[in-house]
Image (cartoon, rainbow, N blue to C red):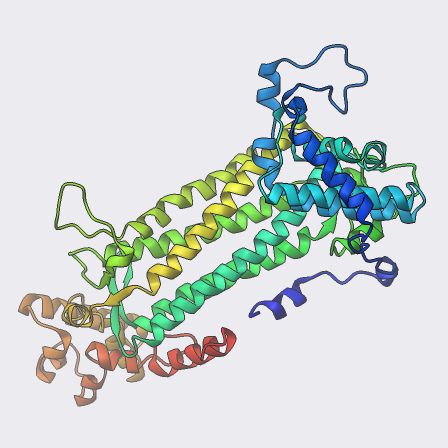
Length: 514
């Protein structure tokens, strides 16, 4: 993968004592068919009874005399959205059960029962056969209660030396780690689409704008590569975020750790984390890893919104620089002539959702004391929505890039307007030894003369130029006109043809374009 080198360079280097603990792999799927058959039979029996529809005592309800009301239950449940964490919750539970058995806190037989039960539950979820219950509050309690229904007493040992506080953070770290990998892959696809678009539009010169006013000529390839550069930084932020996020909260328990002899390094290694988090309070109360992800998403969304804005403008009749394919356009319900670049308008609009997710979680976290508070349940929906939205924005932007045509003739006809070569004229005078401020003034007067004559700088005669300043000579015409102007850019990273060719070569190699 193109970012693999960057990923390896972004991870933390830990002191050797932290990495000295040997990796203990998770046990293979059991071949104990009697146990598996028992679990399958038990699950089928539960499915065929009304037990799944009756209200039950909470797993945490030992000290409570009354059940919570329906209104409180509906308001506090999170299973309606956090059930998408089921894979990561089961993965963490398998690692935890394996560690508990190794430490002698549960038997190997109990471990095997727990793992087989969890895998059966996972299969049922994926087959759409699992009944999610709101009275079991969240993904963690649904799975644990279902496991108890399946295998009985051994399931009650799974929560030894852990709390939902460390469990939910661990699940989210695992989920976000996978999400970041998907986002980075989608970023690469957009970069590839933009690079291919650039390679298909060689030597096309477009007006460059500042203040939305015509400024200087630039190669279209140069502008497209500017987007590629932005997305590369976006990917770098994601990779850095992943490295800081990749530490395990599991075993921190509610906030203080545990007096039981657990091995947090073992579970950290089994789950692919860099190491356990050093401070148990920090492990359950911190959400900066999610804030960083939401921030990186928001910056990416802003970049995509600016790309969308530019392409929406360029698709208008006033610009007419691009024509989107019918396959990425929509029409009007009342105006039959309309062809709208709606995907990029929605990219522009959806950026607000991604920015809003960051603001939401910042607001949730800003007034919370350490350690865990129930407010932190509100961390998930903004993250889920942000990731889903940014993936969609990246995907449709790449699709749009592959389905637009640049209208070269229209662009060429637009180039004479705006005196795009005026700065190059000032550079010419600097090369003649004229101080830049004086050169700026002379070039400005030349533009004023053209405005009065309704002509271009290239149309001025040498005598007319010399009437402004005698320093002008015949070689001035090598600097005038957008084609000549482009040739004069030589600084590193500029829009000059040779410079842009170097940039293209760099990205062709980096993105492995053939």
